[in-house]
Length: 129
Image 1 (cartoon, rainbow, N blue to C red):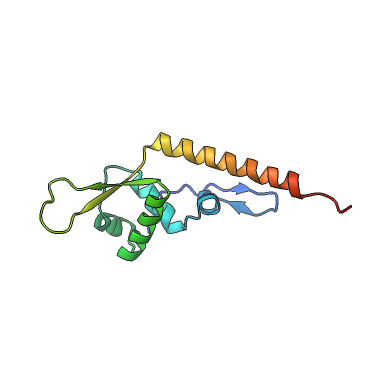
Image 2 (image 1 turned 135 degrees about the vertical axis):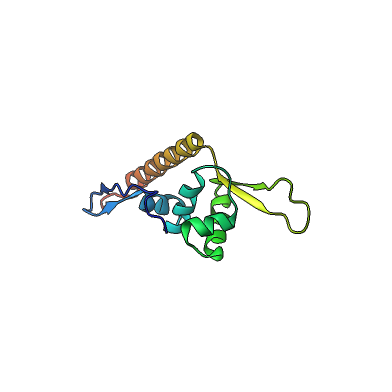
């Protein structure tokens, strides 16, 4: 799997552990490392089919399809019916949503998640009577 897509930048958490983009997206969205790599690949260039993703990421068809289904369900990517393919089963291409739309959504979701966690601590972290 191509590793150069994700910078590897890490942040230090209060526990002393560190976290990167994959950790954050895994926590907030339930995405696996494979899901994140598929998403990052789809953010580059034109819409692609599963075969191109398999070849580029060196992953099995099953892994690609699992990740695509999860990313579709979360509305992070879109599926486009390939034009001109009339005979037989339709072929679909996949593309990430617009970069700025995705980035804005993720930043807002992370902010909302953080505020919800802070609210939970405020509400439930109290001394015993």
